[in-house]
Figure (cartoon, rainbow, N blue to C red):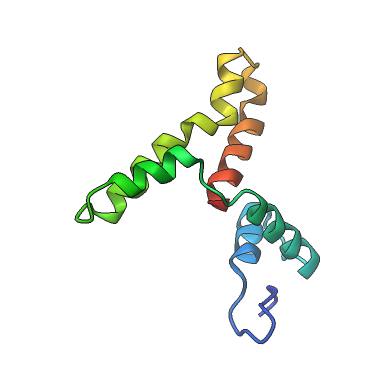
Length: 106
């Protein structure tokens, strides 16, 4: 009941649930709106992933398509780039978090 809902809606917004799970705190409407905008800004898939998905047979199971797309998204991984540059492992979580936010947006 405390989580922000869409205007005219009865169920909490997914962004609010995500915020609660990540922080343990009830988000404000402004926090949910900010997270919504952030995810919207990162929602587009890279062209090579779209092309790959479009080339799969129509009979391919959706979960197979999903897992292949996630794997192909490695080209956009902030963690993979940082790791290749030798970033100290104390900072790995920062890049992992960014990757998680990017993938969630998609």
